[in-house]
Length: 498
Image (tube, rainbow, N blue to C red; front, side):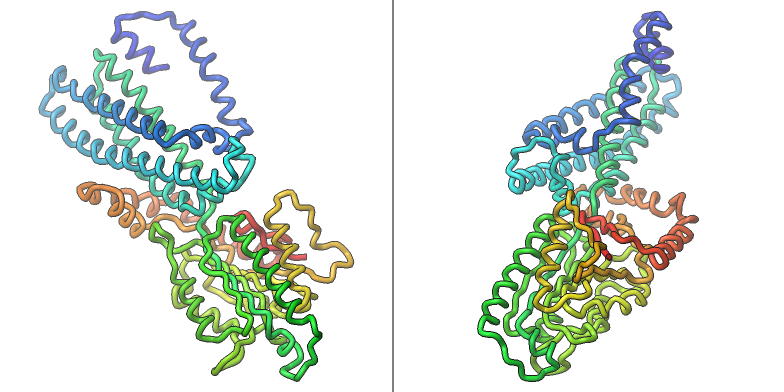
């Protein structure tokens, strides 16, 4: 309003009435400002219709933005005709115009890539939900699809790039300011809202989208009777084999439903009726823990589900040559090969151990430091009733309206979870210098790479970095002394304890 009153209208030779203009601006801006602060709508509700447009129309909008941006650059160039200090204007326009061009090439490519990713997520959404519901917020599957597609990582990097594009637009406009050229001011007032709107959309998406997650499931029920009886001969009932097959099928269906519902990238889902060997288990865990996302960084969360024979101490029972037990230390040593201890920006491991004795690992997990590990298990379950607990937990995790009461009296099987000492330090992966370099090399022209190193500065000069150790200490203390009954993992499901 100030720019319009003091600069734009005088450039047109118009003298508007001040008070009616103020009333008009107040009438137009009051409702949007109130809506901005108190709106009950989510980001997906506000942008849902746009996300469901055909890809062609979204790309047309990007081309329109390119046209407006180029018009603004040309309008800024007219300052060379009207300036009295060309020895300052020409170098200023050349330097800042070049920076503007570089960051806006990156801006346009980011917008194009963003539209492509949204189209892919929309296609998956229609495939999963059938496309019958146009309101994305009615089904949280679209948010999970965005997370599975790595949109959080993409939005975090693109936010920094678009922020620099906005800065160069403001700086170029200040260097090329022209009092007597109303078209320049009109284009500036059109370009800035478009860029700020894109910036805010990326910020909101990076805030609501969860991290990436990959899971591995292993079901090996056939040895439970031998292990439970201490390797002594046991007379099995005639229907034992059929019961084992039925329970195993129910477990497979339940865990596949869990992975599918939460859009967890499935590494493998193995069923072994003859037992698990150490070589087979080690090779699968090596493959899982070394897997990275398609964009390059490691997954934020790795999930291992195990339902099979265990010893009284919770160790997994193996077959074949070598040690017959797979201990927690064995699992931890494999994890540390790919995710060293002591890194703040590291991935985390969630163990879903639905067996009769895996709750005995809880103490070992609780005493582990330097890594982010959690275990979800149960107490009071027998090998035959593990399926019952898995089905209850999956139903609770997949149904947001579930009324499951894990603490009700008379419950035989009770859930229990524990987290490692440093679990409170965990945060979803933030882009570092390597991530930005890989992102630039994969998407942008080579001549833009040197300038894109500036995007690392927000991470190095974080205003909250001085308070971070104190905040992390408070989180660790709370989780250790006052652990909540339900712990949100950030992927749509909770770890629960009775």
